[in-house]
Image: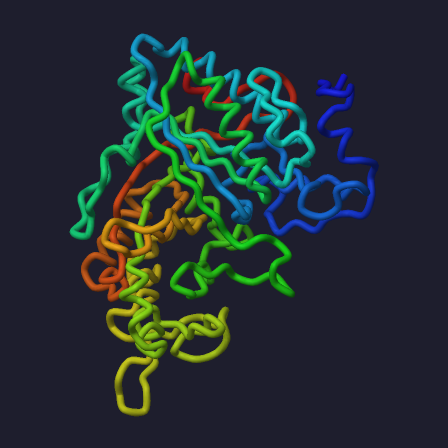
Length: 407
């Protein structure tokens, strides 16, 4: 029976009857979820989008970025141990399944999103390196969770970095996202305390006349060359094959990157394009073609200069410049007002999923540190590395992290 809310109606029942189908841009099958329920008459469009919680991989990895996100990290309370962590993950898993289906949360339900549909809600859970120390599971800590090296541009705030547990909560409605965050915080209260929290946003589906690559706060098209689930070798780049409990999981690098927007806005569009290596208007590479034309790093201008400048961002970040290293980026913009110096406190919540950070993020960031012209306009202010365990199989009463805690 569907759990009930005030007035005797379930949250899902308030959505109305079945209507026209929805189109989803996420990958399906073994790589993703993208199980979208039909649009419903009383809540057509974004509200009725539903992404399955259960699957071989956690939701919120291969799915396109939603319009809103809350990121949060928690530290386990002293004495919580492995038993406390297990109880919390069981509780969270059951709750996330309800929320993803548009159902009331049960324990901790606060009715913030009482009249909303699922809005393509996903909740992704990750484990920081310190979690293994606090739970006596050091022997099961993956080698891939070794601390990230320091990079020359780092100015990291420890209070907004790392954490035992990490959450990514995304949906196409801000109330739905905040509702999920508050419920999960409530359920964690006896086991884990909040360490930091960040809010971000992306383009709302349907805001453009056709699907387009999102733009960041610098106005640049951002994500053109992101790996796609249909690409050969995609799974090998994004999903881990071990250790055993992490098979089918992924590793997430989070960076809070402040953009020096006043400095950026004070340079010409031509210079901005040369810093990135793409036209600002349509995202096409300066080597020619359209947005999705492969970048030609060897092409020269009539005067013999490189069409893609030597310090252009797309040259430094290209797999060809990094031994084939690649990541699945799923970033969100953030805007947190004005800093004491009057500059915008705004930029990018960089999220990158990969099979192994030592062969994904680390070599790319080292290359960017050596010669990327864009770094002059960025400040890296927070960082985190997390093991994102595989998803929960369909059927049964499994929970996130079960293979870690019961193997």
